Structure formats: C-alpha cells, structure tokens
Length: 243
Image (cartoon, rainbow, N blue to C red):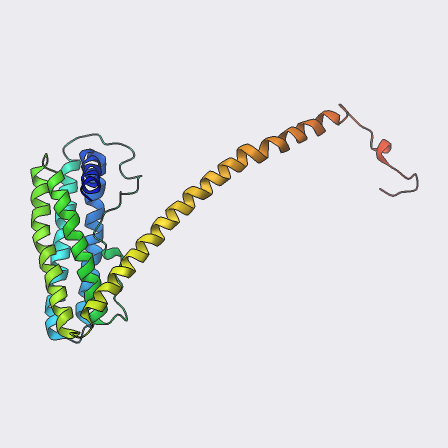
C-alpha cells in the first residue's frame, strides 16, 4: 500500500502545484461546503431530537464558515495576478471534494443521515490532511486546511457518537451501509465517465472505418452520372405517362 499512497500523494501534489487547478479546487470546495451547510441546516429544522438539532446547527455554521474561507482564499489568489488562463472557469474541477453533494435530507431518518455524515466527514478529514501537506508553498491555504481539518475531525466524532446513542444496537450496520452506498455512487460516476469515453472511441472508430467506404461508393456513383444537362423527355419510359 505504501507505493500506492506515495503515488496518490504525488498526484495530489501535481494537482495543487498548478495555479488554475488550485483556484478551481478552492472554488469547488466553497460551493460544496456551502451546499452542505444549507442541507444540514435543513436537517436541524426537521429532526425531532433537541440535542441533534443543536449539533446540526453548529455543524451547518461550520460548513458555511468553511465555504466563506474557501471563497475568500480563491478570490485572494485571483487578485495576485492580473491575467488568468481562459480555461480557468471553463474546466471541470478535479475530483476530491467533500462529498456532501450526495446528501439527501427530506425523508431521511437521523440514523441514516448521521451515518452518511460520519463517512463523508471521515473521508474529508483524510483528504484535507493530504491537501494541507501538499500546499507547503502556500501558508495561507495551509492554515485554512488546518482550521477546517479540526472541524472535520469534530464532525466525524460527534456524528459517530450520536449515531451510537440513537441506534445502539445497529449503528455499525448503518455505518457499513452508508459506506457501501458512497462506494456505489462513486462506481456509478466512474462507470458513466468510462461509458462516455468508450462511446467517444467507438464513434471515432466508426467514422474512420465506415464513412470512407460509403464516401468512395458515392464518388464512384457520381462518376457514372452523365455530365451536363439531361432532357427530362429522355427519362420518360412511357409516351402515355403523365409524369
């Protein structure tokens, strides 16, 4: 596992080493954290548990604060130079975000929501720890990741504790189900990307394999056509025909 971890860290270092990719990642994090904060705020409104309502509210405030930090830092980076690449806002941000974009609030019981939040916050804590280490050249961004990482660890711990409180007999099963659901959604996203790439390759092959023979046949048929004006009377098969 060590070579794989080293390779993954090298990939993250490559992603964050580029200015445009760094800004896009920060902007994407800000959007995801903001959306997650609003969803958790809605969960605080819906839960019947008073303790969870207070914890959800504090969690939502943290997420919205994280969104502000990411937006402010991305804006500060953009101000450091007067010209930017035209592809900065035309490219999709690279994966590796928080994961709260998969969050569903309406109709979800608290044990499912807590299990999902625990898995998402645990994954985010691991990713943010890596991001903090690969942005040594950017102390301001590193400081933001350190602050957010402390919050993510608290979120990860409180969701697990509260899940065990409200569902003591089956909280481990809920965590495994949430992890399996998260992996399944990742698989579906990966499968969609692979299917899109496969379709592009197949259409390209069809263009270069099937189109040339039809083009050659069309040119051959064109050469057999008479050149110039052809009287319509020469094409009438019957002298009594109306057409």
